[in-house]
Amino acid sequence: MTHTESHSQFHDFQYRGLELYCEKVRVRDIVEKCGTPVYIYSHRTFVEHIHKIKQAFRSVKPLICYSMKANSNLAILKTLVNQGAGLDIVSGGELFRARKAGCPAERVVYAGVGKTEEEVEEALRYGILLFNVESEAELATIQKIAGRLKKKALVSLRVNPGVDPHTHDHIATGKAESKFGMELEIARKLFLKKADFPNLSLCGIHVHIGSQIVIGEPFVEAFRKVLDFVTSLEKMKIKIKYLNLGGGLGVIYSTENPQTAAQFAQKILPLFKGKKYRIIFEPGRFVSANAGILAGKVLYIKKTRLKNFAIMDTGMSELIRPTLYEAHHEVWPLLKNEKASKWMYDVVGPICESGDFLAKDRHIQELHAGDYVAFMTAGAYGFVMSSNYNSRPLACEVMVKGSQFSVIRKRQKIQDLIEGESIPEFV
Ligand SMILES: Cc1ncc(COP(=O)(O)O)c(C=O)c1O
Image: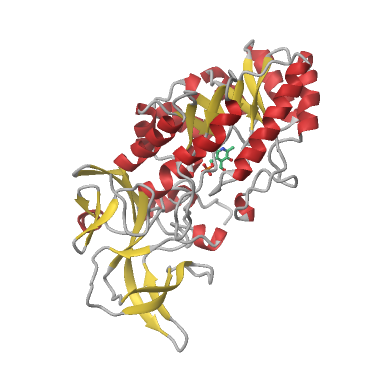
């Protein structure tokens, strides 16, 4: 097991001498073969993270549905499905990926506030385990389609417990003003109206309060509310079988000291002692964040009166988190130079936006054009949020396992940028 300099959480990116390695592969060998920008993932780190959650909660044998929105490359999904994980999906596209990765239908749960009729139908036909439903209108849609297909759909209602998860506002979902979930009283009314939905079995509660939550208390507060609510439902003869407790576990980007899976379990398990619910977790970031890095090349160094800019061949089009969430990613050179002095840099991309930066005011060894650097902990909400803005082809993705590596997504070609576009006659 590898613990690196500033990261006490497990991952498999470490220096051997002056060179950065991913597992047993020198990262420079990958960039020299595949070019930059490139996302590089450690197979072992993914496996280890799923294993940690499984171990911590082994007494309740939860179904762990990896939240694929964090990183949905097929090779990653297959890695996790092979470990027994299920998948948390939020769109027809994610269902398509889940199927391509061979995820058994009974391990798929489907969340999201805006499922279309076509998406619902596709999921019903596949026979997924549970729909996590966010509104009465959505319930009516699923009923209509399940009725037409003569199927019975299992449903969890996503409740909004009104808990502040103490995280960035853009990734807090359990506060009262959030678009996600429903108030407990609305959920109660829907459970009582279950006769209106003959093709649905309302048998679960779903709760997800936000992401990058580093302490246990907000979870405990939310799950207590959920359990009180379930007890009150049971008094009304409403039977709940599934409790989907969402994702949200935080990771180390810089100086955070998040709870480990074991510490999280220690806080949570006592709440569920003696209870017989089937527990589901939907971790995304915890599984994938520090299993991946984004590697790029310094194109130019530009010094102004106020700043030293390291201008990279990668930016917000590959990794939007710094500008979207004020997120911090450590910047590690692929080749350390211990003799070099340290300089303060803004590490920026080539895109025509002043928000196009990857790191600001960082002390890094003196950089030169042609140097490679890695943006650490980029495996979650990295590639999946990338775009073709400024007509930049999507980056390549590589997976490392031991001493082998393989391209798991080819770099987009310039020609791909105009695929599907056409110039009409009238132009
Ligand atoms: C319903 C739901 N479940 C799970 C997740 C995964 O969250 P995380 O990556 O923080 O574990 C999200 C993230 O937005 C979500 O909305």
